[in-house]
Length: 114
Length: 171
Image 1 (cartoon, each protein chain N blue to C red):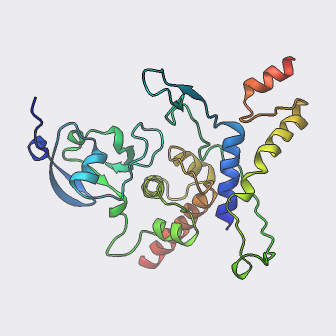
Image 2: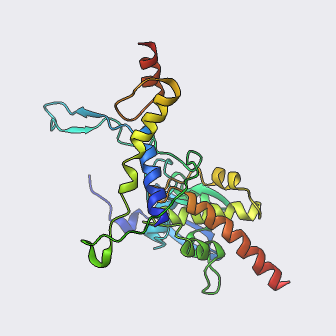
Image 3: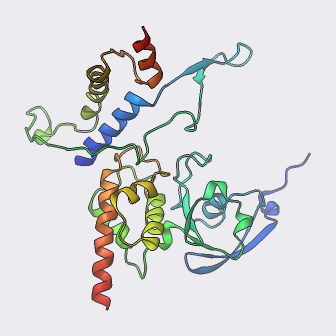
């Protein structure tokens, strides 16, 4: 279960800081489909082991009466608070609100200049 | 233009040491080491990831050093030593790294695990007592999407202790 939490923190950090989904339209004479602008992990960077911070996991064991034998999910829940936490940390540090992810240095510099 | 049947494309032949065994293999000359291992030799423990040298899922040890087998041509491996995850354990026993990874939940989906295991083995062969930062550095070329790496670091550290304990019981 700790691994689920740490994995979620990791994915959340990737989404919050690095992983930008950009799309482009194929020309009309092709399929005109919406495809990934950078369909490789050369451009779509994910955090590596060097980027991963220490994570303190505290599990609160409270059974969910609606789940089988009190079970509940643990996988994706810890992922969601990471993005607002990072954006709030940026606000706390430099005083600008970045309201879209990923929170990139370019966006922060632009917001600071305004 | 006629397409050659697959068998007749196997015009290259090499002999190399795969997981400690002399191995002869015939294959099409354009194939990478990864493709020959998986398709011609049936060693599917080494995983096919991005094929661009970015994700690290295909790492094997070539003469003891981790390489990305999707970027190595098989014809370059003549006479060399290749170690894949299949060759880690000895006499039916898991390697201490494999043991520690299984015990400590260092794998979730497991796709990156074979490559991280051999990369960690290369690290421990070179440096039997690595620091957390050295472990981080060593596996920084292996992407893992599930675990967040922390339990992988802990498993490598646990394997260090297991190997030390094994050595002290032998001597």
